[in-house]
Amino acid sequence: MTTHSDVAGLGSPIPDHAVVPPVWGRITNIDVDRGEGSWLIAASGERYLDYSSGIGVTNTGHAHPKVVAAIQAQAAKLLHGQQNIVYHEPGLRLYERLAGLLPGGPWGAFLSNSGAEAVEAAVKLARVATGRPVIISFRGGFHGRTAQTMALTTAKDVYRAAFEPLPGSVYHTKFPYCYRAAGGPHAPDANCTCDWEAELDLLFHQVIYPNRVAAIIVEPVQGEGGYIVPPPTFLPRLREITREHGILLIADEVQTGFGRTGELFAVRHWDVEPDILVMAKGIASGLPLSGILARRELIERWAPGTHGGTYGGNVVSCAAALATLDVIEEEDLVANARARGGQLAGGLRELAADHPSIGDVRGLGCMVAMEFVKPGAGDGRVPDADLTKRVIAEALGRKLIVLSAGSYGNVTRIIPPLVTTSDEVDLALSLLEDALRAAQA
Ligand SMILES: Cc1ncc(COP(=O)(O)O)c(C=O)c1O
Image (cartoon, rainbow, N blue to C red; front, top):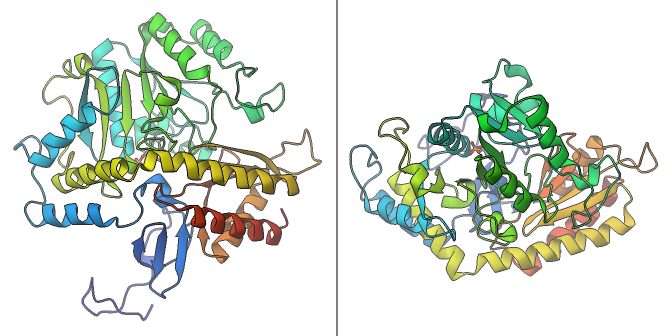
């Protein structure tokens, strides 16, 4: 590339894309310059409607002025105040505030850097607090890319299959995927016929004693697995089963948290209180930060030094998180997630009526997806990953960024920032309508 930057490298040519290793699988080739709300602006000046939100991170939009101001003010004072060495005000305020975000409890928090790191913390805490070894996760779940979290993850082969052997004492059970249920597709409602409970019971009879299980980890809505919304009975019943056996329930809200689904945390849709809740992504509007909330009596059983990390609870990230929470509250972004998500899903359902290759439209709040199939083939649910790729490429050609998901790569997920407007949703729908037609959906 021959363009020059006035930021990094002070005028030297910007290096070629080839300096980035191929392991970063690529979704676009945009050379981004800046972001504003729902928009990414390329170095060329082209504007893209970012309905990926950087994989569900920029809930307050790109570069929200209030978050930027908090980061700038903090960065001018202190960049690193290591948690084992000092206390810093943004951290103290954030620990206190996070503990008040969820009813029930009382809660204690632990802060780290990435989603996977927070899942690791949840697993370590569950094992140490129960004295039990086993963790159960759900088929189609995604929990991260470290060794332990890969072992929990089954959303797609690519996330784990090249890395065996993986840590043991992890078993997987069935998530209620209503569209792909053996008995036929159905709505995730009270009449759901998915056999997830029988499968879990079978696991307890064939594979592992329930009293050896430390925790069951679950995404309240599966993310990378394809934006799969469970029926309303699922989480409450899972809570009952875990309580019966003294198993901790870990809600992985890395993708569903901070208003994404139209509640601050998705477990609130079903009034379920987990023992541990994992959070990241939307917590700090893009600065690296993650954490867990856990019942205080669990966190108090975690002995000093048995977990930690150099950067966890970084002072600038904590300042960004506090400002993010202010913005979510002041701008009522949770209600906007519900309204804009409803508008988006409603529009997609209208499009689906004209496109039989859209087998399912689903979602919760601003976590919305279309699942693409080959009409007339097999039982009507044969996945069409090629079409999904074409739709995403055609959308990108129209300057709309959306992502794929699903074990078969045949789901298009749409993740608007929670600040998005009704006009932007209408624009996205009309771009998607054009993209569907161009992709011959
Ligand atoms: C539900 C869930 N858990 C954990 C993770 C891992 O987070 P990170 O990529 O920050 O490690 C993700 C990332 O997509 C996620 O969606």
